[in-house]
Structure formats: structure tokens, C-alpha cells
Image (tube, rainbow, N blue to C red; front, side, top):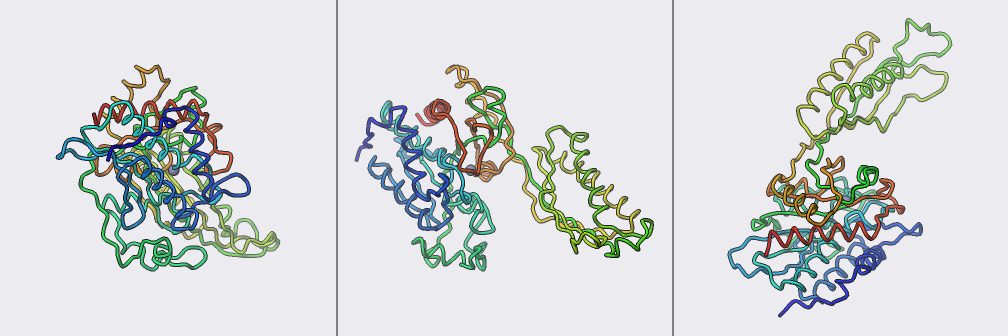
Length: 415
Ligand SMILES: [Zn+2]
């Protein structure tokens, strides 16, 4: 049956209406959105999206983990598929645009293409990934990592949410019975294109309308433990102390100042600090802090870690403090496809869209696909850089320009 495009999707205001429509699933009292994996709101949103895709006669299906696909079939029977979309889940009290805009942009782009040009040569599929944020269970990219074959059901056995509900139980609740699981790996994906809000201030500051992502940063996370000696704050002379707070403050100052020296694009964050016993009149015997390091080049991260950890050893030795460094995350930087980046640039220039090359400091589904097929990630501006908040906002004009660019890229690739 032929695709039926409702002409309203060609109207500019329709995009804004769709953002509001999708945001109603899981709307919070502050005007934000909470749509956690396999929750009632999540289920209703995925189902509603499927209904909308069905109405337009896209070929829809859910895979066995709840990723939703809407396919505009290509005329070439041997052609591979161009996949485009983003994630449906949100953080707790997140915004209306993170993830959702990428799905809507892809959906609208595909409908507009069909309305203008009919069926493509290569199939285009809109995807609404079931999970990316890691906001309900302690794992991320459940949707894209299943499609790319990096995860199977094995990965989530025994995992619980904050309320003690098991991952497998939650899956079953949403209608995806773990017993019916088959790995939803796709071998037919030629390329992946994701449109997303920037979640930073760079585009807005530079008054640019689109960001063409060159790299997604690598991330390492550590827990640093310092063990000294708890003692009396009044009777322990300064030279006899093994003060874990003093040591921590030196390490944190050092690691912060060192970032710029190694590379101005390098970021390092100590976001969590725990002191024991955490009492005003006791010298602290123990400190534990988190360390999050990001850059788009592995060798820069290597160099930085080498230098700070050598200094950590030196400082803690001098202060007679025991040092324990444990790493619990290591995500490699991923480069986006250079040729597709060039194509995006060329189209942006033709359309007089103000664009720039940009590095993504946040993780996205595109980094998972970037390891298995040519992948493009495009950003539209985030007002004041605010994200993961009900205040998340992008102007309609910017949303439309993003969709314009995406539509044109899909045309070049599929028609
Ligand atoms: Zn996102």
C-alpha cells in the first residue's frame, strides 16, 4: 500500500506540535518529561509513535527489546538500509527535545521526502531506540547496542532499578517477554544518521544553526580512594597528620590545572567527594572522589592520565597517605564519517545554513553505530546550553533548519 502523507507534515508548525504531543507521554508537574525504559509512559509513547507511523503506512515493527522501526521501502531489492532516529527514553524530569527531536526530525524528513519524490532507491528506516540514557537501570545504550550486536539479554540478568524491580521483569511488563528474546542485530544497515540537540552552548555562542559532529569524546571514569589516619583536630600537630582531605585537595587542584596544559579541549571533573568521618573536629582519615575525564583523542587522555597519576603517587607518598585508583568506565572516542560530514557541509552551504564542525562531549547512540558503520551526528542549538531539564528549549526555526538539512542528506543518500 502506498505511503500516505498527511499534508500537515509539510507545515512548519507541525514539528512544534509533534514535540508537544510526544512530551505529553510522561509529562511532569514542572513541565518536564520522565520516560524511563519499559515504564507505562515509555510504553504509551512508543505505541503512539507506532500508530502514527502506521497511519502514514510506513512498515512498522518492534524488535525484541522494544526498539521501534518505521520503514519507507526502497525500490532496489538489494539495497541496504539507511537508518535515522534517536532515543525515546529520558532522564528523570528531563526535557522535551533530548532524543525526541531526533525521532521526530527523522519521521518528518521521511514523510516530506516521500511527498516530494515518492519511493527512494534505498530503504530509509526511522528508529525510536528504546533506551540510551541509563536513567532507570545501571546500563546505557540498551537499544543501539542490541542492534549493533554488542549486548544480548545476558548483559541485563540480575540488574535491578532503584525500586528493586528486575530488568527482565520490567521488560515483560512492557510486553517484551525475555523468553521471546532473539538478538535484534541488523546486518543490513548501511549508514546511521542522528539528529540531536547540542546540550551545550557552543552553537548559540557562535550564532550557528547547525553543528556537524566530527568526534564523540572518549570517557574514562575512576574512583580515587585516599587512606590516612583519623585523629584529634586539637592535639595532633600538623607535622604528624595523615590528613586525607589535605591530600585530596592537592590532587584535585593539580588535576584541574593540568587539563589546560595538556590540551585546551580536555575536561576533567570531580563531581562526588566523600569524607570520613566527615566531622568538623576530626582530621579526616579517608576520602573517596570520582574522576571523569573526556577528550576526543585517546592519546591525549593517555598522556593526561599518565601525568596526573604520577603526581598523585608523589603527593600521597610525601603525605604518607595510601592511594587506590580504580577505573570503572573506559569508552573510546569515536570519529564520525568524514565523507558524510563533507556532504552535510556542502548541503549546509548550498542552503545558507550557518554551520560549524563540533565535538560532542556527551555520549549518543551515534557512537555505538560509529563503530560498525559510517555514521553522522548533527546538532541543533540548545538555548543557553540547558539540557536534562524541563527548561530545555530549541527555537522552531532551528528545529526546521535541522530537519531541512537531514531531509537533503537522506535524499542524496537514498534517492
Ligand atoms: Zn539524548
